[in-house]
Amino acid sequence: MTAAASHDLPPVEYVRLIDEAARLDGVIAIHSTARGPAAGGCRLWSYPDAETMLADAARLAEGMSYKNAMAELPFGGGKSVLRRPHGAFDRRILFEAFGREVEKLGGRYVTAEDVGTGVEDMEFAAMHTSHVAGRTARPGFAGGDPSPWTALGVFEAMKASALFAYGSSLSGMTIAVQGLGSVGAELCHMLDGAGARLVVADIVTERAAGVADKLGATVAAVEEIAGVDAQVFAPCALGGALDDAALAALKAKVVCGAANNQLAAPHIAGRLLEMDVTYAPDYVVNAGGIINVSAEYLHEDENQVRARVMRIGPRTADILEQARDLHLPSSQVANRIAEQLMTQPVDAAD
Ligand code: NAD
Image 1 (cartoon, rainbow, N blue to C red):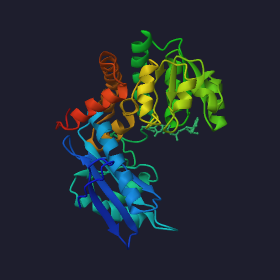
Image 2 (image 1 turned 90 degrees about the vertical axis):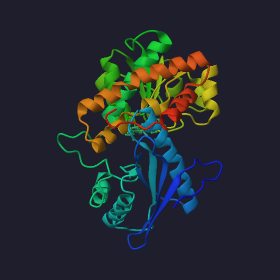
Image 3 (image 1 turned 45 degrees about the vertical axis):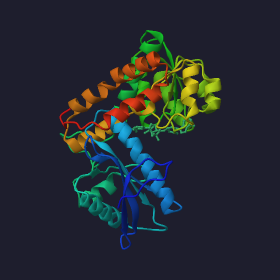
Image 4 (image 1 turned 30 degrees about the vertical axis):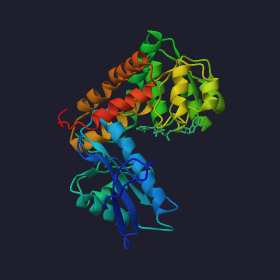
């Protein structure tokens, strides 16, 4: 059940999931449980071999430890990863089998949807376990689409970052938003409400045109958005937005957005520091979604979700101040704080 990780992988406990009849071949990786159950979604993906799947699970589980701890949630970090069966398969049978495996852990691991899985899959799993979130939204409970909460967290973090870097509010600033999906589009509405000017880009041109129509945003080319003349750059598309080419073009002195894994390589953190760019660490900023999903499991209501999300602004400011005082990359400071938090047990009421 437990496997020592190779030296370049984070240490996790692996629970292999195999049920041939259900075509279940996967793993639950548990990275930390000091704060509470290891929580993290269930990914369904085509992995070439079991080794690649285990490595992905370990890295994703570790990421969840950082994210959950930083959001001050009463959860550790874990992740489940299932190999997508070849050809046609019955999702109900697969996810019911998965639910039975989650139940066997007695609440040490809490699952939810992730890439390749959805609400219906979690409903199948929930037929056999209560340790599952990301289910159909029910009146009176938190849950449902996490994107507006993620956008609110990014907005609060951006206000704090702008105040830190420029000493002023977002009103009148130009914000370059890359990616206008569920989070990016919602964020644009909030920024517009705060009096910011928007420059936007999306590979789906109708999305950019839609935001331009509704909010009077200027549309930029996808390959130029990182380098437009703006005070803030908000990566809200895919990971790796901050690479050497983007940094060479970057004019904004603040980077704050929803995308996961924005730093394309480890050296980018140091480059941002050298360039005196205020970088709001991605997993600090985009925690609104996980806060909302967790609330469903914790039976918290919308006010409690809002209170947790509103802490993202002051938390971002604190990290940026510490990074300035210590002259360290903000991402490094955030990791140190999360590493400390992830060893600390918490009360579910915190
Ligand atoms: P989404 O899929 O709804 O939107 C992504 C948008 O980015 C799409 O409109 C897509 O066309 C666009 N896009 C893709 N590549 C692009 C490129 N190179 N340039 C410009 N636009 C591009 O996703 P989302 O839910 O809005 O999430 C956005 C990011 O935030 C993702 O990285 C996601 O992992 C992260 N995130 C989302 C949540 C959430 O609650 N949805 C929570 C935490 C983190």
